[in-house]
View 1 (spheres, rainbow, N blue to C red):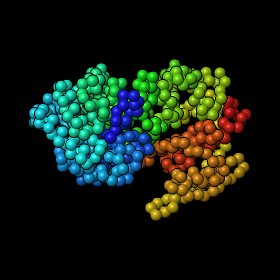
View 2: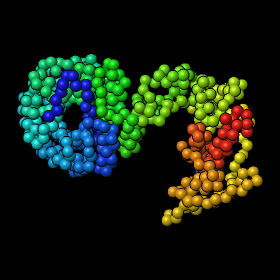
View 3: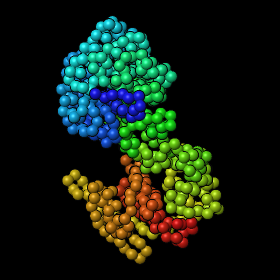
Amino acid sequence: MPKQDKNDNHVVIFDSTLRDAEQSPGASLKVSEKVEIAHQLARLGVDVIEAGYPRSSDVQFEAVHRISKEVEGPIIAGLARTVEKDIDAAAEALRPARRWRIHTFTSTSPVHMEYMLKMSPSEVLKKAVKAVRHARSLTEDVEFSGQDAPRSDVKFLYEIIQAVIEAGATTINIPDTVGYSTPEEFGRLIADLRQNVPGIDKVIISTHCHNDLGMATANSLAGVVNGARQIECTINGLGERAGNASLEEVVMAIETRKDILKCSTGIKTEELYRTSRLVSRLMGIEVQPNKAIVGANAFAHESGIHVDGLLKHRSTYEIMTPESVGVTKSKMVLGRHSGRHGLKARCEELGFELDEQQLQGIYEKFTELADKKKEVFDEDIIALIDDEITALPEMFHLDYLQCSSGTGTLPSATVRIVRGEQILQEAAWGDGPVDATYNAITKATGLKVELENYSIRAVTGSSEALGEAILRIRYEGKVFVGRGVSTDIIEASAKAYISALNHMMVRTNSGNTLGAK
């Protein structure tokens, strides 16, 4: 049986992504996808995975059963109403797990009891005690939740919690089901429960906060400050209506502010970003760019003051490192608010060393362009540099390209590349026509580089549209960008690759062009 020690500073992370988050509008997971997420949650290091609500459907039962059977590490929990058949179904689905928990719940607020349950407080209490006692006969790990706890009569809440503890509950969850509380209120509720409920020191107090007023994370942490030692949360803060407390937010708040919260979790924080993207992809719900911790802009900086400070010392504008949550590095977004320092740093990253005169000329053109565009991309910067300094000599020229691909055919490509007086010709195959083309170019040039990013888009409309391929390659720690345009997307892709190689060859041979590294 889990015990709560007032000196125990470990906070249990109870993940409800596979149960509460799946109730998000538009979210639906196949059984195999739920199992895939559960494996990642285990790698992340969550303490408890709430795998689903087994009695609600055959699919839910199968998912909970498979996760119980296949996923090792965390405790696997199943949700059940205070109904014997729900509890039996949960126990049956969970039984293959090494460690499992039955999580039973009922409503405790007057509005819920009157209009939803249509039961009196005494009937609710009696049914809750009976359910917990039955669950405890099946497993030693039983959690009880009183829905809508902050809007409940506090004396009734004391009474029902004491009764279910005596019946065998080992975790008591206090859900802010409708996201009604403020941090001060919620923290005080947890403190009052600890002071007024006999036997509560023998169990773990949990929080389950919804985000209707945007305070789910703050309320959860207020609970921890006042003695709660389990937080129920979801990846990306997904869930009913405005969602739940976000796992990545509560975990990184605890990690970053140990001076205030004085506790810790067992989460492998470097897995947060990967887990976030997996859940986003499988549920089909994009992560908002400004989402704390895992959003695309969480470690992005555009303001000149911010970029300048970041370049001088990361701690000026970053309270945690991107690497600590699994993001490779900070992103400096170049736009109309960016300064010379940020532009210079990006130029150096792209392989250019500029003197002050060159930088000033490029910066003036950059600010003109930034006034017209929301974000200035690397290919824009390279074009500005080429225009300011000198046109790039064409070290390699694509003279011939032939590709073959189709259903049941191994994609292959033949290229002929001219380098000065040399004719370089090779053939190769790959996973697709673009991959085959790049393999052939690599063989012909003998240059092995890392393809970091590749994208293609239509420049114009209609079926005869021009396609623009843009890619980034990395060589010896430097990034080089290439761009190619053609009505044939394979040719556009080949031209982009050759363009990037030309940039690389020029910029890594000092003296070939003005300002080259």
